[in-house]
Length: 202
Image (spheres, rainbow, N blue to C red):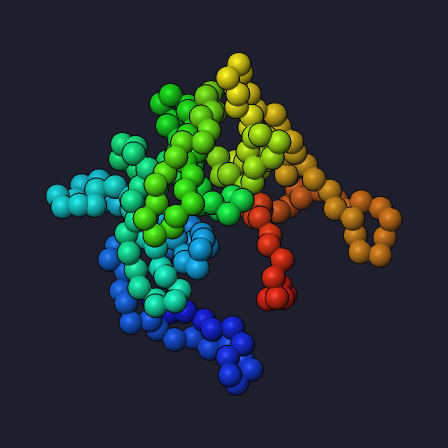
C-alpha cells in the first residue's frame, strides 16, 4: 500500500510504500473513513471460504506508525459489506447496519477507534440501508442513491422525511442570477461531509 505526503520538505507531494501489509483485502471502491488519527477500511469477504474471515472486517490503519489492526465490530451477526457502512458523525465513529429482510437500519457509535465499545444509538424501521451523513435535530441526515432525507426516531414514532431529491437540483451559474439546468445528464453524484482545513481543495 502507498501513501502520499502532501507538501514534503521539497515543497511538493511524494508517494511511498509503507512497510506493513494489509491482513485482509479491503474494498477499493469504498473510501476510507478518517477518525482519531487513523483510516478505517471495510474488508472484502468470501462466502465460500473454509477459513475466516467469511464476513467483512473493520481494518484500522494508524497514520502515526503506519500499522494495520483489526478492530472489534458491534455485537451483530455476520457483517457483509453490502449491509453496512462507516462514517464519522460529531467526533464519533459510526457504523450503520441494515437488514434487507426486516428493513431495519441500526446505527452504532463509539468514541474509541482503538478498542471500540459500540453503543446502539438509533433503530430505524421500515427503512432500507442508507449512508449516515450527520446528526440533525435528534435524527440523522442520510443519503441513499439520489435521495437525501432526515431520519427521526423516538419512543412514539419512527419516520423519515425526504429533504431533497439530488437529481432534481439546479445550480446557480457563476456570474449569473439565473439557475442553471438540472443534473439530468450527470450519471454519478455523491454527498460528503466537508470539514474546513488548511489543505486547499482544487
